[in-house]
Length: 129
Image (cartoon, rainbow, N blue to C red; front, top):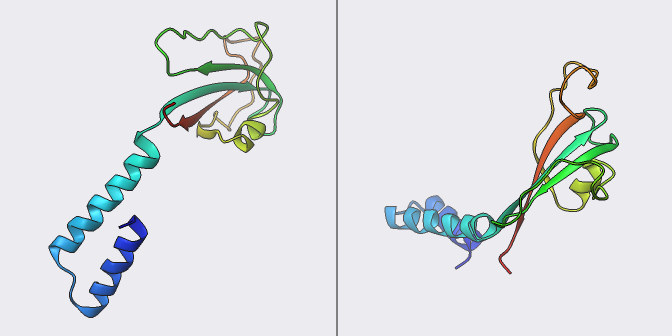
């Protein structure tokens, strides 16, 4: 039985006053199974994007992809290869999820510190091959 079907059955039994602890256990197991199938079975890819401004539409200055492979060591080198996305928004449209936004409070001049632009961190979960 799917998670949605288990939830519908539990709601019906609750309305009838017939919901049991076993029904709740079945619901918890169904939700855990669905979460594992959608979240836990894939590999997490991490993408760091450094943008010119804290907006998701700002131009990408550099990007680093962290692949879930033991022999892949990422290096932040904006000139090494083409940047995969022109903006964070473009990456989002391609299925990436932002998991960290840069500080939006103060502008800074990146010539004064060792930071390249505003750092966004994105993730994408991909199923096993």
